[in-house]
Length: 141
Image (cartoon, rainbow, N blue to C red; front, top):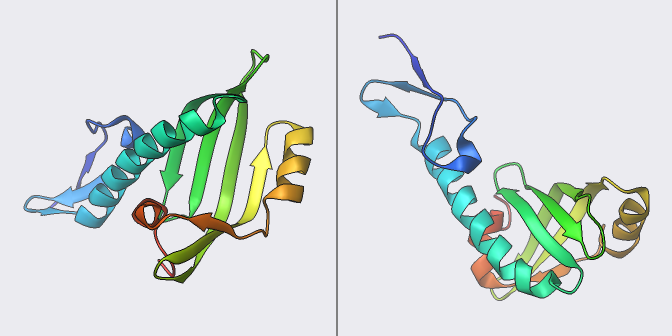
């Protein structure tokens, strides 16, 4: 049977994702992983919005748990041009109830922000609530 491509999915995070399927057989792992990441990204954006409100607004946030990456776009307080931050690689460590996230590689669209994030975030274990583990992929995933 010929493979077909689904190119227009009903959720924005994966609008450009192409899933290959054969009638009767859909790549569920990719589809459900993308849906999970879309829902996780929306929840994380809502949670983080109140925590960084003093510094600016999150305009876009995407978690890609399979790749262990996060991208965000923010408009900082007093600025008009958004900044982008890309956590290119993170790691989850720990045991039940005591998990940490360690950013291994990060880039930012502003040199000063890149330097600040490298000094304060990269390589420093940050506590992660258990509820966030599913969104981030959990340890060893």
